[in-house]
Each structure stands twice: as C-alpha cells, then as structure tokens.
Image (cartoon, rainbow, N blue to C red; front, side, top):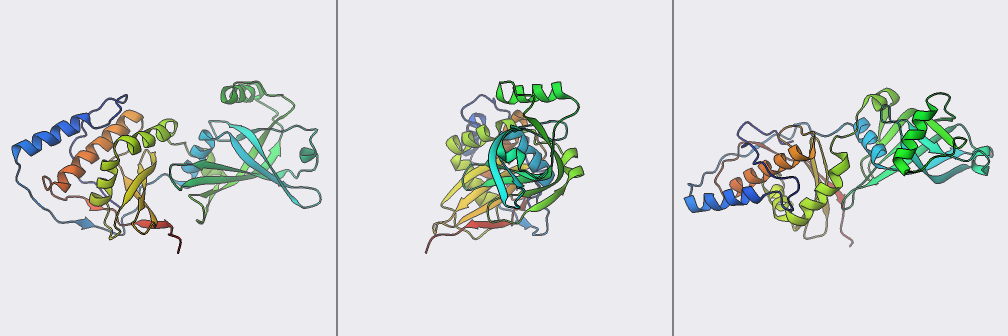
Length: 310
C-alpha cells in the first residue's frame, strides 16, 4: 500500500463550500507552467507487502448501522422455517445496539425464535454495497426506556409505540465488504468498542462532489498512485473514510477493479478530508508533469470485482 513520505507538500487550504475543491491548486499549476520548471524523474518505490490502511470490520459495521434505518430481520419460526421481514431500526450510539419496532400481536412476533439476525446494507457509489449481519437475541428493554424512545424520535421524527420497542442484544457480527466476497466475523466486544467513521455523515456528498467536478483528478490518481498494467478508461470514487478512499477502475474491456488509496495521514472531518485530497491532487499533477520526483510507495493491490459479459 502506498506509504506517503515526508516529501508530500502541505495541502493547499480550500473552502468546504466550494463547488470545486481545487481552485487554488489550479492557480498554482498555471504558475508552474509559466516558470518552465526543470523536469525530473525519480524511482518508483513499490512494496507489495505494505499493509492496506482501512477501517476495521467492526468500525465498518458501526458505520453501516449509523447510516442506515432499514434492515432485514430474520428468525426461525416454531415450525423451523426461516422467516424474514424488512423493518426500521434505530441505534444506540454508545454501543451500536439495534432498537427495533415490532408489534407483539403480529404473527411474526408470536412465532419467532429469540435467536435472530438483522442484515443491513449500505449502497455506495458504483457497484459497491457493503453490509453487516448482526446475530443476537431479541428482548424488550427493561431500563433506559426514555433514552430509547428519544433515540427513535431523533431517527424518524416520530414517537414509537412503547409496546413495540425491542432491542437486539448483539452476540456477533458478520461484515461483508461487497457482494460475492467472503465475510469477516466480528466479536461482540470488538463491535461495541468500535466507533463509526467520523466522515460518515458527508461521505456520500463528498464522493458525489468529487466525481462530478474532479474526474480528471481521480483518473490521475489511478495513473500516479497505482502501480498496475490495467488500462484505465474510466474511474470513479465510491467511498471515503478517515484513512483513505476506494476507487473503481473501468478497463476498455469493461472489467471493473477496486483499488484503495490512503490519505497521507488520518483525517477526522470534512475540511481536513478535502484539504488532504487537495494536496494529493497537487502532488499527482506535479508528478505527472515531471515537476516532482516519485518519492512514495505506489499502491499495488487491485481487486477485480466484475468482469465483462462474453
């Protein structure tokens, strides 16, 4: 994975409300062209064993739960047949405990097994849908009923019938990064102690803004920061978090690859995320124009997530 060295320039500040992230950077690019700087070329440093910087499965699961409000609740009925239904849920922000609303008089509730699961999916840009499945036991809350009611009201803007409110005691969690991929089991302790990503509330907005206004920069990232023989015909950012961002690369043969590009350092809010992206874009432009030598590790891990139809 790319390990940014100290040669990365300090990101150029930008306004978070700007429709484009790189107004000041483009001004600097024009200035560099006018100065006619000497071109230099450095060596590519690539280390395939470098660890990928990304949130843990527990953190991803907490983020999915915080950003979602509908899931598929499943259990085994008394006749042992599996039974599932879609329902709304809220989440206790301290430990990530799901809060469900189920009518005690419904046939589903009367025939359910206390051992159950809740599958929640988070659709990201492009072909990526990350998900988690929480396994646990369903119960009625005995304490903190006012707090649970307030969490429901905050989530949905309405009061919940106190007789309908249930909580799902988490036993373990299965986190799956995308369709057709293997999942990772997360213990109850790891899940409850993890924190959702600090960029979660504006990640979709930031990704859409970059894909709309800065596609040239995303393509340049694939050429400069990624060490691959895959020819890039199109590239889209699909998600961003405190440690970096995911990009989908489309080849002329319509194959789709996913690559993870880390930030030089961890970010914790929208302003620092934009500033870091801005600095990386500036460096990528300078490297592409041979104004700056390659003094960082390139990303080597590409995952093929879709293949063209024959």
